[in-house]
Amino acid sequence: MKGIRFFQSIQAKLIVIYVLLILIAMQFIGVYFIRTLETYFKTDFIDSHNKQAQLLAQFVEPYLSVTGEENKGESRKAELNDVVNNLFAISNAEIQVIDPNGIVLSTSMVSHQAIVGQKNTQTEVNRALQGIKDNQRMFIDLDGMRKMIIAKPIGSGVKVYGAVYIIASMEELYNTMNLINRFLITGTLIALALTAVLGVMLSATITNPIKAITRQASAVAEGRFNAQVTVTGSDEIGHLGQTFNYMMGRLKDALSLNEEEKERLASILSNMNDGLIATDDDGRVIVVNRRAKQILQLNEDTTLGKPLPEVLGISREEMRKLEDGRDPSILLRFYHDEEEQLFVRLTFTTIYSKGKGSAGTIAVLQDVTDQEKLEESRREFVANVSHELRTPLTTIKSYLEALEDGALEDRQLAGKFVSVTRNETERMIRLVTDLLQLSRLDSRQAIISKQLTDVSEMLEEVADRFSFQLDQRSIAVSIEVVPAVGEIVLDRDRIDQVLDNLMSNAIKYTADEGRIAIEARRPEPQLLEISIQDNGMGIPKKDLSRIFERFYRVDKARSRSMGGTGLGLSIAREIVRAHGGTITLESELGQGTKVTFTLPYTTNEEAVV
Image (tube, rainbow, N blue to C red; front, side, top):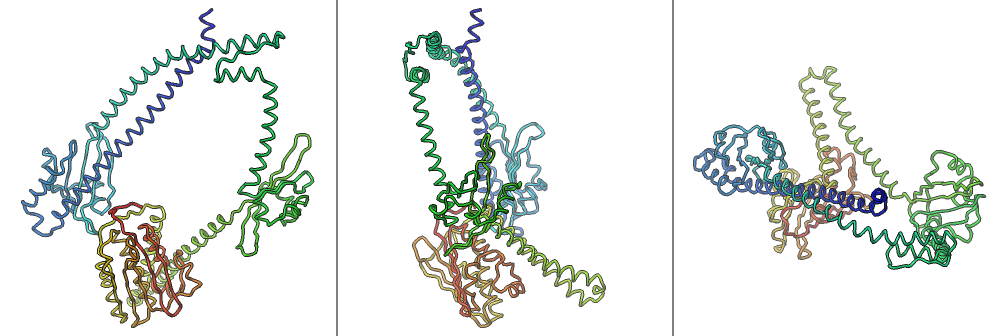
């Protein structure tokens, strides 16, 4: 019987709780530790092999970039084999170097030398040969071993000279994880044993004072109120004894606490970000917080006691519908002096009192101006995209119908119709491409690959790319680069896209025999400033604040006729921002336009946005 009572006692329950808590904690810690460690090992494994593949791709690029018979010589293949087998050998992994046609040129595994000269048809290799950089896959081989495939394109520019293919075993990683699991299980068992021993000793220090308090409580129940609990410590049980001895004092403290809670509630109401107005059961205002007075521009002295509809500026019928309807909210607009339009969402909540029914109403005013502006921008964006796509689609449809109705028989007319259809299709493709690029920049998925670039050479190449258009329209271009500019680390392809866009705009909106000036200077030691200025038609002042918005055009008809999508300046701004710079535009109608963007000098050669 005594043994049964022990297992029903608090002491036994505490021991069981200690053991279970330790067991659960160790399980959670173990699972978290193993998952975290596994994730770390996998990530480190993948990163190290990705870096190895990237480095190998850069190292063998000179061997594959040569053309003709130079790339087929035995000496060239021997050098390639030495690079793969000696400089870049990886334990438990096979490395293959593949040419642009998918033919294996070299392999690091002696037993697989027979595949040299054969074509590698792996999906990852095909993607790498298309210029896609991220190609990796984990799988279980036929022998049951877990392996990782990584493929990287060879070539730093647009052209791909081949691919590096690595297949590495992950069994060593998983063997290490299994060993750690065994160590963790052993530690858990030892911890449980120690917890059981300590639980017996610690539970006695808790249950013994509880037994003493129980004896004193029995004495109070028998009428011996002079008895008091002996407080031997300042822990929870000691606090329990103090609470028992000073019950009436605690009651007084509880009443004081109630008053403090009321004051705290009043402070919260006065400092809420949302406006709040409360009424009594007659519908008259009794509480107005600070934010509500700011939104409605109220004076508390003249507001208290007024009917709620009068304070909010709505009719009683509207308020009654809101209180009785399923959606007790309404969107209001307010116009204040020297302020723009303010959108406020008004929500009603009826307060009910037990036995009285409705005891008043609480009106919450939430400033949703920013949300409404965002929603308006979204609607405008959707409308612009729909319009941009509908126009070429309508043109394509009409020309195709004309061809179907007989214009196809007229070869000259049919050719003209097909040319127009092709141009409109290319226009839609440019639009979708620009939208995808903007989406990647907005979601920070675009990769910014930086390299050391000579600014003077970059600007000269921009002028060369547009030399035909400049000569055709007799537009003079000048390039001025301050000697202090020198070289800078940037993503050459993307900055070229910015320069091409700005240069194209300058040519479009500059009359024949006009002038375009390209300047690069260094206003601060760590800042590069590039500007492109023309003497064209310029931009009205009212349009300058919106010129970088998507699909915004100053002259919509002319922009579309020239093939613009309205996204060029938006893309340029996002690219410059991704480099940590800024872009500004200055223009005067009839005098020309100057676009200036800045880039910080940095030593980081690669960054991912």
